Image (tube, rainbow, N blue to C red; front, top):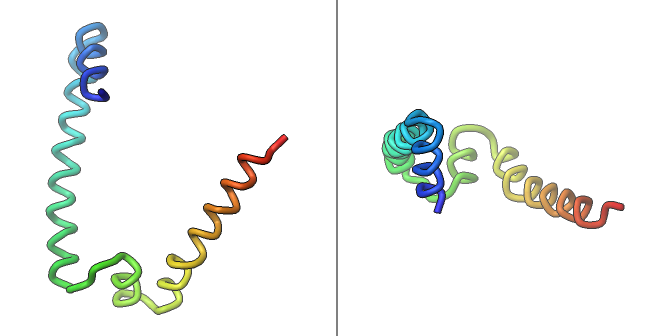
Length: 82
């Protein structure tokens, strides 16, 4: 759906919109290939494991416990605002 709407925008407003999305997709593919080789070389399966390997174990705890708690709190606040 997203690609079709961008094709429409490229037709109406110019080819710049379509080109931007194709270049962004190519950039994401290249970056994912680079980052996946780093993860495979370090033999970790999850992001908390990678952070524990590179930094301290406290970063792993913050990512595993702190971020989901913050997301739940923000979701609660957004839903129950008046």
